[in-house]
Amino acid sequence: MTNPAQGLRLACPRAREENNNMLDTVFELPNAEWPYSQILMRMALGLSLGLLIGLERERRRKEAGVRTFGFIGLLGTMGGALGHGFGLLAVTVTGMLALLLNWSSLRSQQGTELTTAAAMLVTAMAGVLCGQGHTLTPAAVMVSATALLAWKERLADFSMGVSESEVRSALLLAILAIVIYPALPIGPVGPWGLVEPRAAWITVILIAGIGFFNYVLWKLYGTRGAELSGFFGGLVNSNFTVIEVAARVRELGESFSGTAYRSIVLATSAMLARNGTLLLLLAPAALVGAMLPLLLMFSMAAVLVAISQLLRRSTVGVAPEMQMELPFSLGQALKYGA
Image (tube, rainbow, N blue to C red; front, side, top):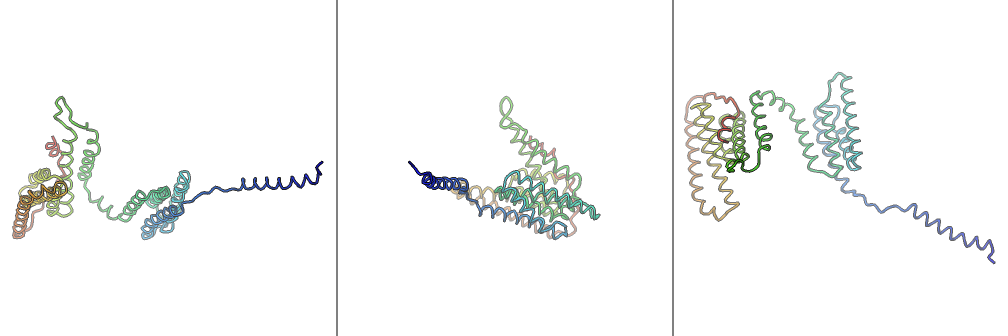
């Protein structure tokens, strides 16, 4: 017969062992690995982007400066790293800070800080992207936002200097390229398949685009801008460049003929250089046979441009004032596109 005291002594070690096993089970922690290096790199990127835009705001003596935007970048990065809900919370907190900033500015009768508030929200959302592992997207967004803030005066001067006809022409070019072109059917249409709308419309876009580019360079550099446009237009399509230059001659008259001549020769030179480069990249063996003709044509074009430059310098008198009415002619583009 077992002694009760002896049974108690036998039971106690077994109970203690069971309790120890239970404690080990309860307090056993999972073997989790935290990506410290990745998180630190994301936080460093978010902080750097916040400091970048904060530096610009600090230079303009804004209430939200380097430290504020640095904290916002860190806040967004931590929110993005912790999850979507925390990222939304970080953006919400930043929005509340922006409202508080505007309320404080209105109380002190300094006006609203809408641009700074928008920059704060952009910084927070870029920080969230950094926290989620994105790099190029938030960096591109923040650099663009900083450029918009830094170029405030230049952008304002540019917008005030643009005429209504120039704005309409830019919108028309965007409609041609972004709205109409994607809506056109792909491939040949019609009973015989002779018409390919998209290919024809590309011609319209190219002529209009070269004309608009020519107009912008003309506004910036005068007659030299037209010559630059001829060269760069020749890299794209020399035929369409010649069409656009010829239309400008009809618009501006004989006073533009010398500039038009140099533009056409430069467009031809650019076309020759482009074709030679394509042969070098795609068919080096064919370039050996075409080298002599290309060099002869390119040399002749260079001689013609040099002669025209010498004749222009020897001309005495002031160049007549020439005004372009529109950046490009839609009718001209449609005529050659059809």
